[in-house]
Length: 327
Ligand code: F6P
Image 1 (cartoon, rainbow, N blue to C red):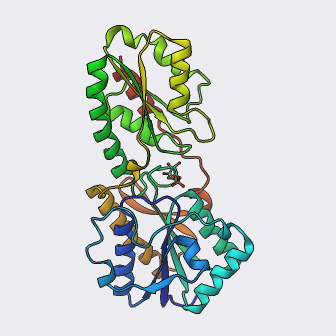
Image 2: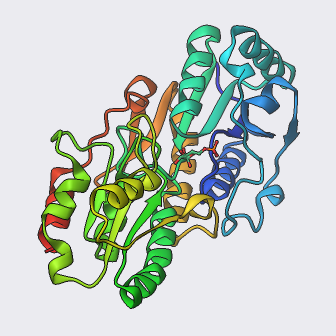
Image 3: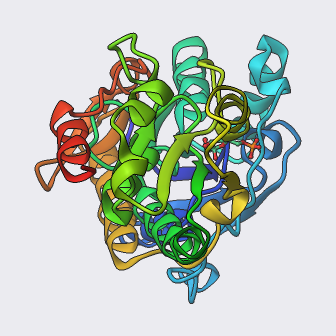
């Protein structure tokens, strides 16, 4: 296989804190290796519309601490079509890009997989999403920062919940994954988490009320995953509390997009830096169509087909810990 000389890098899908640190790491590691690096702006949209600029070591100076992504991001509908992907390949050819590094979540890595399969492009993925829902990696870039942001916000909500003796349903991101809800619930000392992964078939709201929590406590915090495929969401559950348990004073706080912003934590910066360097190592080794992951503290290569399978279970131990501690 011909040696890589030029790489492209893009961020795609929802932004996540630490993406800049990842771009920086990929760019610098590539330059050290003698590669030319092109930054592709606005994700796959930029690839289709030739929004490309060369990156130097200076282009990524002072970016490691910044949230968001300076390459911008998008959810490209055109890239979901064969014509769109064919146009994207024209741009890759125009700049002689022989490998592409994609930083993003499920949809973005699915796009990379399609590009790799249809056009034989060497693609390496980095898991960049606050949802932590990519399989084969214990953590995704941005998840730790979002989790800490949620914890900081909910600690404040707890003050008002306690002062008013209220139940607060706090909705957090995660699409169809409950990692943010479950782990933030443990970290803030919440009384329950309502998550999409619950396989017990039990009514999670009824189970929480049924535990008699309000008898022993003045206030309750329940972390609720935003409504994805499973329906639900904090508004839905608040409506149910009002109808089914009218004695309780319930309020909703939807944390929304503040969860995706802010300066990345040290953990996310280090993770992004390690993964960025690993992406270039992987290309040097001739790897293709894999996502860089982290398992037991070590870098691992995860085939795209595995990473995007959407079968990353929440550990039962986490569910047990919250149950035990929320008495
Ligand atoms: O995938 C990251 C995420 O923040 C999800 O948690 C959320 O459902 C989604 O993106 C929101 O997407 P958008 O930015 O397109 O509204």
